Length: 275
Ligand code: KIV
Image (cartoon, rainbow, N blue to C red; front, top):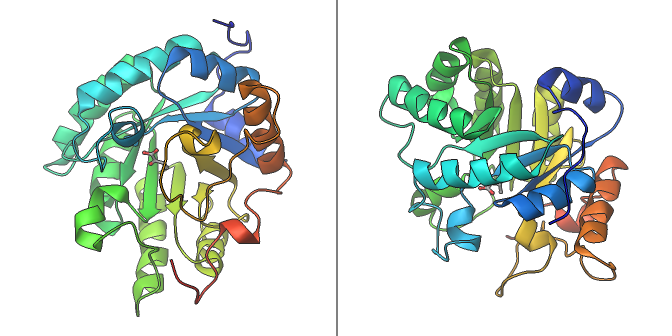
């Protein structure tokens, strides 16, 4: 296995400073070897996403993923990557019961090697975010298409198009910022709305099918490498095509994100077009 970089771990302070000068590159990752590759390629932030339920475990949604699953993969990634900021996803059912339940599960993920946890949801999770931040857990919010709500949404659909939805998303973003979220993933919302959210908040916004106006971008690693079969969402780009190695493919993603070349117009959702 190639060794990871010897650079010190990025801090939130570093990320804010970097975001003032260029876009941030974030990717999901689930194991040590890929974590070292992402580190060597210059990825700033690694997310141990509950997408692991789909791309690693083979489920058809993220719902079966447990805290123990995310903790295991977080520990693997933390051993492989030295420089990137590490975020662990709070899986379905791990934070909805009470802020105390969320805090206890977040502690497990931080002790496994994360520096921050990510929590899906809008205004309804703001009190939980505040509870965790006040007790020392940095939080990344996740709004828009939140895959843990797939059964409520009736599929993986672009969010923010219905009457009143744009206002609710903007309000949720403001409330989550007020609650102390330091970062915010915005997933699969029309580009003009994602841009409005990114411009309305001061937290580090990370887009996926959102807008190049976000402070950074994230993709699922397997999507970036074209692994797996089936229809891919509009926001996915295969960076392995034409690359000489895995590290070059990730490096091409990092370069395109940093320069604001990814996502292009073909990777985001215009106001009125279909899913
Ligand atoms: O679980 C995940 O991988 C995610 C990203 C797609 C943002 O939530």
